[in-house]
Every structure is written in C-alpha cells, then in structure tokens.
Image (cartoon, rainbow, N blue to C red; front, side):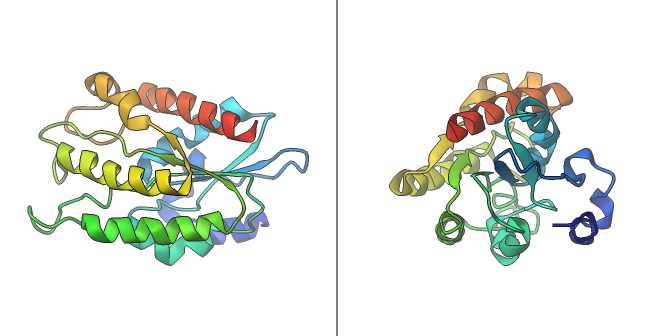
Length: 210
C-alpha cells in the first residue's frame, strides 16, 4: 500500500495520531497487524518500539469499534494481506449501553456470531491469530458494566479455544491494577498503563513469530 492510499483510508480526526502513521514495510521482516478499538490504539506505538527490528507492526487504519462495525470494514482493515501474525480484540464497544441502560450496542448472542464470522475470515488469511481479552471496567464507569466484560470474555474464550487461537489475557494482567493504570471511571489507560499493555502484547507477538 502506498502512503497516499494509506492516508485515504485514515479518518481525518485520526491523521495526527502516531499509531495511525504510515508504516513502510521492510521486506526482511514479518508483517504484524493489530486490530481493535481505542485500547489497542493506545498500545500500538509502544508495541512498534518493542518489536523494532523483529517485525513491521501495522494497525487497522481506524478505530475498529464493535464486532458489528468490523465485520463491515474488515476487508479495509486487512489491506494488502501477507500478515504473519494478527493480534485482535473486540468487546469494549460491544458492551456499551448508550441508548438505554438495558440495551448493549451488540448483545452477547450477536457478539458470539460476529466473532465466529470475524475469525472465519481472519483464519483464511493464513496468519497466526492472537485474541486479546477485553480489558476490565471499573465500577461506576458510564455506559459500561464490569459484569458484561466477564460475560463477553467468556463467550470469546469458548470460541477461540474451539478454534485453537492463542489468548493474550490483558484482562487478568490489568484487573489487579485498574486504579493505577486507568483514570477513574474510564475504560482507557494512562500512558503508563498503555506501556504495561504493550509489554505483554509485544511478548505474545514474539512468541507467535517464534
């Protein structure tokens, strides 16, 4: 993909963000793709730093948001292909309750169906897949509930286990340290928290490359 083609895919509000910078491939290095929401956007740049010289790390040219949204845009996210490893996550957007306190953006039954369809298409790329568990939500966080994260992660774990997909357990990594790594009542992570996530994500990708 040329640089001009890349910038045509990136939404204007994201064009000054380092994680969505144009990345030039090194033919000597394996290609790695990060898929996911704003949580994955926060750790993209530090993962690139950690894997410099070992892999060329790309990400989707957008916030992948929910499973429903990503099913529509997955071809755009996959780009030229040739991926050795794809590290992915969906969940934080799916559990969001913006329109009604009793209605999630993507209910858990649809979430499971969408994941099956997403993994079917990702497996067809021939890449080694890594599923990252959805990170925890603090009590009192607007529009989201901690119990939903547990429930949706459980559904995802069943699907990836049946398919033999590796798991990067970011939920267990961050659960004991939520208040240290996240601002209060916020699903996102501080800069230090993003570095903690990036360390484990980079490690899981190295293991898949090996």
